[in-house]
Length: 136
Image (cartoon, rainbow, N blue to C red; front, side, top):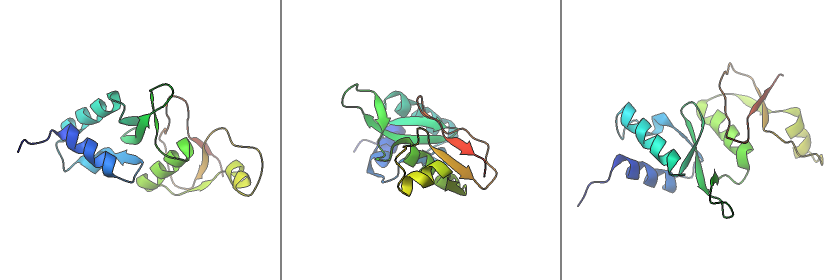
């Protein structure tokens, strides 16, 4: 039986996973640091993953209309950003606009915004969306 490449093993693991966010360290047992990095870059180029920050990758699928990669998460970028913060172990609460929307307000927040209670200095963004860090 032929041995699978690191890229194909990582791709299989990503497809089977229920997670939407993957960290580089999730694959550290599969290969060396540089090997994993090259495989992740290839998966991004193939449209299987989208880089959303330093060491942060989101699961994607092809858009039915354009064929370009889009986030798999049903909640879109907001859900992905919140899951990324959780995976990084950062404590956060929804911003006032999101709380108001969840409580029944009709205005839909345009960008994902959270209030971070821990020390945090990273960018979480795609080509179209950026996580806004609000002051408490």
